[in-house]
Image 1 (cartoon, rainbow over the protein chains, first blue to last red):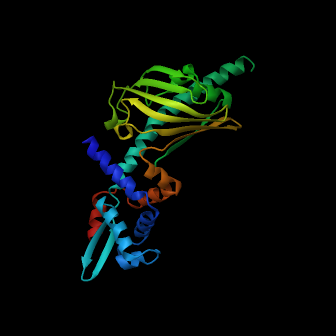
Image 2: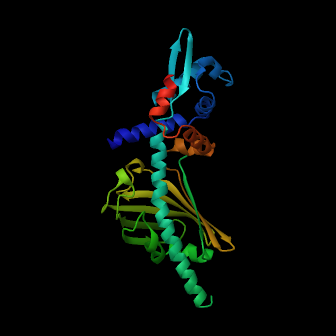
Image 3: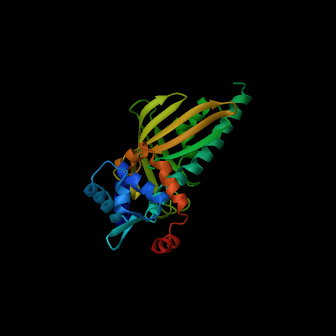
Length: 118
Length: 165
């Protein structure tokens, strides 16, 4: 199970590791539901390249495509981001209590140094 | 997004905070994610020197990663030492630890800045998970991802329904 989870996280981070794909996601977070051609417009790349980026994003579940007539609409689907956020928050928790103890320890040492007149 | 940054203001001078980060006595007083014991710490504080530390968890702080009573050990190598301003080290789990980080090396930085009341300490644990995230972090993905998440609080059922309208 852990491996599956890790692989999903790996693929998610890979999907996010590209500036064009991040720009696509950022646009979709502003404008909910864009046609593929509207989405491709601001990018200086050809339509097939845009479609490839959309495939990557769809494979990790970050976007959803729906077809109506000849128009394909793309929507953001942010749910897969949650495991990535959880995972980072775990490291935050990992250090937080330790730093509190570090502060207490250093502050005690500071008081001792002051008592010695240092 | 691959990095964790924490800032603390500590009422102690930088040299004292620096010692707490680099001496065995200092490290064993605080190291580890909860009140569980530090089993050992060795620190050879010089460029290329190593720090290794093993701790036992009191509770399940890291949830699915580790449980109460489990032991974990990290091995670090000092990459930069600038007393009392800055310490940079590599970070590796050699026992237990985070399964997502097995075989990976991340980077741990401590920055100390003197302030009126003592020291402002910044901890950065960077290079977590993989290179792709490191690159995306450099390009400022962090803020954007946060924004995305804020836009979709919970990121569960509600979003699905809205998306299907």
